[in-house]
Image (cartoon, rainbow, N blue to C red):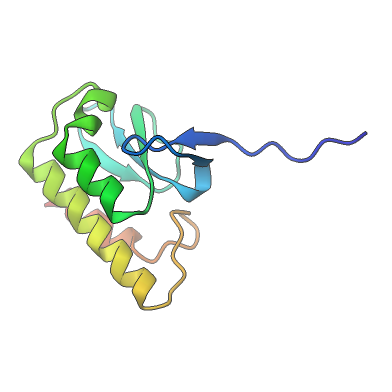
Length: 118
């Protein structure tokens, strides 16, 4: 009997819902200590996953859940950059661009780089 392809599953840091890794958005604390959105899902560093739902992003940032999982406190600048990313993500979804957190099809990669540079 042939098995189907293995699909990695991860839990949302805020709500605990288990979803395929590709459906979640990965936040990573890099080895340099920077906090960024990982569109590839492969950046080295401590990672946390959030659902693409507004409640999860608010809960993850407000209740310090990301701080705990990333084992590092988020600065106000980190929180603003993450919220900025989420707002762009929502706008792209509403515009019907069918955005997924995949690096190959993600139109927000350039905009995210602006947030990480500022």
